Length: 208
Length: 382
Image (tube, rainbow over all chains, first blue to last red; front, side, top):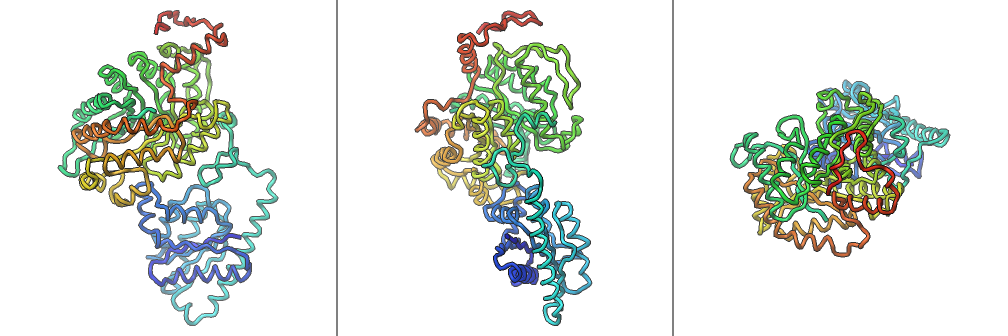
């Protein structure tokens, strides 16, 4: 099971990074063999902007995008900025190749100063992942500054969310295996994102 | 190996002077540039098609016909012809006409375009982009090969008893390249027809270009047109050179930093490392260009983008002079190690000769060469 943790924390250290790491660790607590891959958007921040402006992806950004495309399950964590997800977080998901998160289970997390930002996950992040056709888990994890000090409930929420993600990934794997006839790429060698040929030419012409 | 240049026909402010050429000046200059390309020994000049400012080239066949009249050997091509929003009937007519006027020195490259509003402006839906490219080309392919076409499709009004005129010169349709940056369907289309595949190779890392070309090559072999390494591949590229590489960097940087397509993005150094852009000495340009082959195998056509980003025409002509100087070494480098059975890019002469071979074999001789609809007989005079 390959779980990719994307976090778009701005500071160093950052509470979004911390939350992402905690969620990843909690997954590993349940599924010790899970491979946890961490993507820090901050490290490719200017590359994401360059990609938007010119279409050119740096090798580091291309590697990060390939990691996301390879995920069995995704954990995505953003700081809340001015009432919604951070701009950098959104930009990163804007440069993803089309369709790569389709049917991927996604656990959302967000961090902010106070609990008054809690609904940013539902109000701003969920619609983005619905657009991407991901399977968004109903319970996101929001961590306010206070949660890091006083509250044991954050640990409980992290563990519950991680368990839900693991269950969703297992279910998705089962769904894939039991799908009647998975569409097999015509050209088995070109399996990377965006370059998959799913129909031969005459079928394409016939199905216009 | 065919080596040439392609232009997107942008009219851009020169950031070092703050001035842009007028449309009239830029259009005159493109003819000068194309003529100069032939003078320095290049093989191909290709022109883009756009339907919005800051580009002038909405009507490439007009420009190319004028250039054809002023040149002797240059192959005129496009980069690209919009197969999605143009009527395939008009493409068939325009390019057959151009082919006659240019004495066969014509091929063209199909593309879907990169400007969304062009679709609605021409009454199409951008979501149909790939399907328009497939259906329109299927019709175009027939219009050049069948004297009388009955056709019904999804996008265009039907045709019954239609003959596209003039018929292709010598009954040899212009060779077609299909340009695509990232759509496997287009690589598949090129492979299916045994046409050429062109990757613009400007905004992408070489390994991406390599994967697209590999897909096309495998499918070309799958459809029985030859071995994968015999498929017809073209690449774009861009450079800016001066005899001294520091001078090249210093002179090009303001153009790079202010160019509409790069400005505010990655630095010149980053862009040069991510993509095939080379800014440096003629030797550096030569070596980088020859290294493309390490990624895509022996290929048939290399086009460079030179006249863009507000560079003065004088500078573009100097770039052509420098390219002319390294051209013999570039040709020699491309020829080195090239197997004898890897073909050159098809030309009118080679396609005519290949058809002659087929005719002589008696495979195709039952069809009268005389056009049964128009009654024309003089078009087989070579």
